[in-house]
Length: 403
Ligand SMILES: *Cc1c(COP(=O)(O)O)cnc(C)c1O
Image (cartoon, rainbow, N blue to C red; front, top):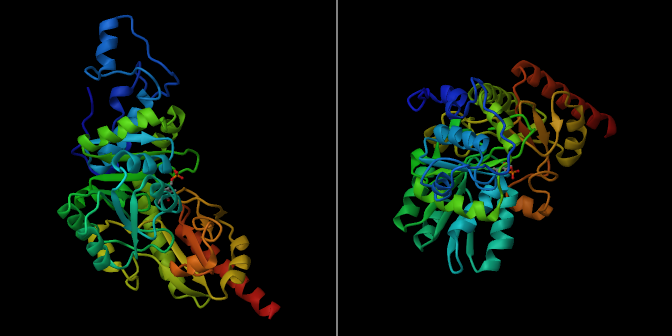
């Protein structure tokens, strides 16, 4: 008997969601089905499955039992009708855009989207005569005006990377629906625990599962959830395009997601404590975290988020030189280009998310050269605070010695 979880709270859905139907021979854990094809002794059943009239699997590029459980769990977490998965977050994003856009269409989005997404907007879509309008992320009125001139897709991301700006989902989604646009929201930074864009009217929600969903920095993946009608079209593009999620990765992501709610709860709490600590530290000249009342978009964040997330950024007095001294002193952080893991990860946007931008471009985006993106892990909050304190101290005393 399938254990029904649609009525359960989100943490319980993270643990149980989607698993029951795939368990085999009494196993309590989802099997990893490494099989490219699925055989049928009865040609009529085969035909019905192939036509999608009967449940089952034909070929691994299209569907797989382990991968299906991952999709079902995300579907339940986002409260969607359907979900489909991809080999990476970027595959999810590009497949969705190419599913719905044709020459002559317009896309409205923000300047602060994830670096790879920004490349699709500026480098690839224009090659197919798709017009892309990127707006200043803080200027909701300008965005509404651009949307009102007509667009096929409104593409949003909130909180943004790396300065944690927030866009008002309800407001912009309404504007987009007035002109019949499809609204797509990258919910990677917030996770389904902290924010559900579909609840605010978004048509499709995207995650890089590589980050918080998997949570252990050991598997790449992406996922899109929304109405059956739209997800079916995205699935069709993906089954042909072939950016399929691997069953082993699906298994790792599934295992990670069982603790999603616990990790996010801890990461929300630690990030808030760390943001407050840094805001009052003399070595720090700016902290970007939507949970702080000093944050420019705190009001919107409070309205649409249930928690403020595990990523924050801050800039050091002394700019890039201070960053050079500070980062290697951190004891409890990988210095790497990732986020959302159980281990804390820190790095400057100039070597990670915005490596392809020039210093001027970064400045225009409001990214100071002394900025550090800090993705809080699940270590004890006190240890992280102590670690930051000693690294800040060491960085500033080295500065005094050298000057
Ligand atoms: C990492 C990331 C992506 C891309 O995901 P991959 O799995 O690395 O392809 C997309 N959007 C956001 C917000 C991300 O952080």
